[in-house]
Length: 116
Image (cartoon, rainbow, N blue to C red):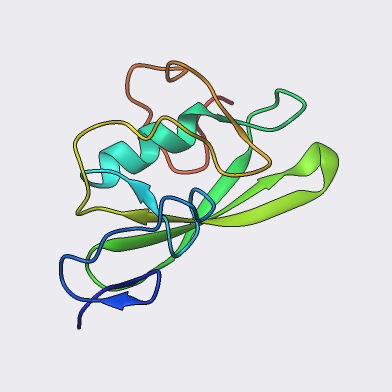
């Protein structure tokens, strides 16, 4: 099945850079699950707290979905990752979140437990 980004269908479709970061139309670029986990470990809530997250599904073999929540302020969202994308780090955080410059640990691989 071909991927769809910003109304374009095809195996090499490109994300819409004007769409919100982490949305279906502009997923977080990564090169696999370790990159997803490192990115999630760097996310911060507006109050500086580390959000809770859990994997909620996949959109085919190259997509991952994570539910991210900031419990102190009762806020949550779903973030989309695209594992086919670049080896470069995504420099931006999804709306409502901040991205720390470095992971709190060298390589956090325990889902939902990073930064706690």
